[in-house]
Image (cartoon, rainbow, N blue to C red):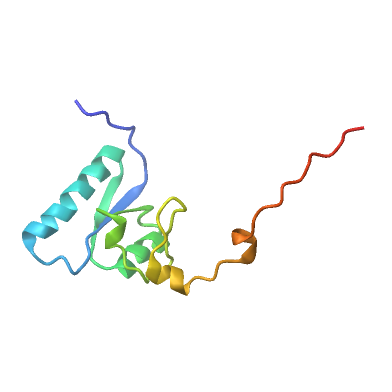
Length: 116
């Protein structure tokens, strides 16, 4: 029997992009998302087809989690954009980003202070 986490009060919405129109493809995207909602013990809040709809539910407080089949399904121009430092930099986004010099500059290693 699979391990299930304790139920939470978090509500989750499943995001299936509107571009997914074939019923079989829709099921292939939605099914694992719904399984994730159940496995995490979230309260199912519905399925949305656009990122603005998902974000509106979050802003309204009707959902605390958006479940997607893969981050690749999220629109590149979503606002707010969610990125993790462990993910590769997308070239289209990287061209638009300005990286502050303090991030790319080599870090200066300082000796510890002498304690008197």
